Image (cartoon, rainbow, N blue to C red):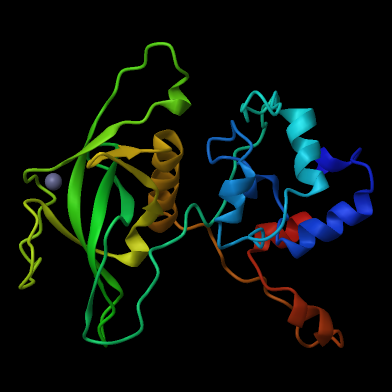
Length: 261
Ligand SMILES: [Zn+2]
C-alpha cells in the first residue's frame, strides 16, 4: 500500500491494516477501481476484520488525500487512475452454506447474482430456498428477476438504481426446481459456488439494485475466474537440499513467488 507512505504514524497504520486483514488496495476500493469503498461497506465485508470500531487514521488519510470527500460531500471517487488491472480471487461473498442435512431452508430478502455469458449481462435472482444435502453440492433455489434499466439524466452512472422485476419465464427456467411450496414462474436452480451475493433495496414492495456496476463487474470476474482459473501450479522445490524450512513456507502460484524475488 504505497499510497500510505506519507501517512503520519505509518508503523501504527501498518499494524492496524494487518489486524484488519488488509494487504492490497483492491480490498478497499470498488471492483471497477473508481471508488474508495465506504467504511460501512468494509465493516460488512466478512473477508476483512473491520466490523468494530470507528474508521482508522489510515482510512481517513486515504479519504482526505485521494477522494474529494468532505463531511458535507459524500463523494468517494478516487482521484487517481490505477495502471494495473485489479485481479482478485474473491469478488463477493458466496451465499452461506447451511449445515449438511435434508432440510430445505427458507429465505426472504436475500439476493444473488451471476453472469449470463450468452446475454453478456448480470442476472439477479432472489433466494427462495437453500439446501446442503448429503452427497450433493450446496444448492440454491432461486426466483429469476429481470433488470428494468433506468435511463440516466443528471446523476452519475454509479448512483442509478435499476428496478428488478419478476421474470415471467425465460431460457433459464429450470424444470428440476421441485418443491411442494411456492414455485416461481422463472425458477432457477444453482450452486452457492456459482453465485455471488448482492445487496438489493426493497422500497414499497419494489426491488432496486444498489451497486449495479460493481455487481456486474464482480459477476463477470467471478465467471472468468471459474471458467479460466489462474494457473495455480505449485513451485517445484528441491527437497534434497538442507533447507526444508523454506519449502514449508512457500506455497503459492509460481509467478507470484517469482515476483517476490
Ligand atoms: Zn427468467
